[in-house]
Length: 76
Image (cartoon, rainbow, N blue to C red):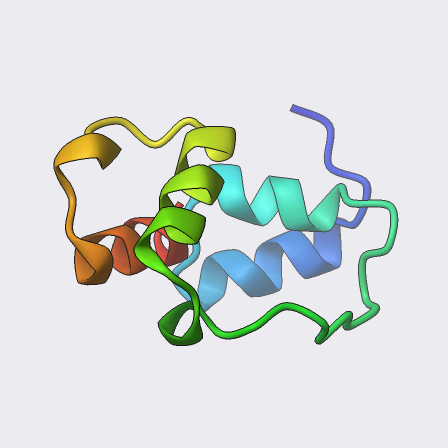
């Protein structure tokens, strides 16, 4: 796997992020820039969280409650 920003990838891995999430962040075009426009997960509805989990491809999302969806999204 080619990683565009190896330094950021290693820093994220050291923080405990998964390989996949670290690579996705390090390979994003706007890496290093903070958007800050999205609401925190806790302020979103279960339906909004479900749709985001669906877009990412989280397995078992239909059986998850709001807290489980938040945890799954944070750990993906």
